[in-house]
Image (cartoon, rainbow, N blue to C red):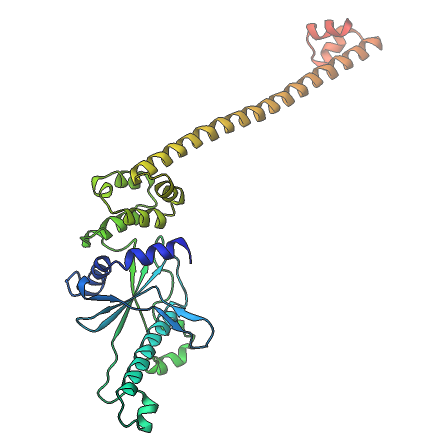
Length: 324
């Protein structure tokens, strides 16, 4: 499990943050989900294929309203996400059915064939599961949103089948598209930072603001990790720096690297230009020596100086050098 997975699960499972995110995404900001009513539930299920297990990121039970809320944290698009969410939710319902059947068995009483087959009684119900996919990558989600979008159905058959096909979808929240001001907790600063990741100057100003200076340590850490600022996260963790100190030092490091690279590039360009100029000078000297050799040979063969000047367009100085 990577650093982002661990950090994200701990950060977003904090009841106050989890409740606010669900309220903003599902209920238009109304205080429907109360942090005090949230109970974190096991998020691992036996695999339907009996190989390994299925592990969702976060699952919370609203004990007051009897609703399960699932959250999946993604930094890249998963093209099979609708099927993945459907399996997670089905696994949760299967867990609920098994718990109900086990409870009925412990209570005793007559167990009929129908009871064994269905495992639920007529008065038993399942808790609904609502899953939100939180996309923390850059830009917009590129994957599918519904199971029906994964089907390849010939156009002539789609009109006949589409309304009859079972479908499944999930709710999506994109970090770069959400209104950060809709949040009252530190999720506001978290999503503000995510939305500035492509603008280093704007991000630097944001991280130096008073609101960011007063953030909880786990919030600063989550921002550093999800901004892919590994060096900043390391400085915060190992050297005990604040976020502002870490980013200031990194920016100074970047400026120094730029100055060093500039000097090295300048020296290299100078060497290249020097080699080019040297070649040019060598060629010029070679041409001059060849021209003088030609003039000397013409003089040795007894040709008149005026005739040589006329034929070669040489100067009197060049002719005098050839005669030496």
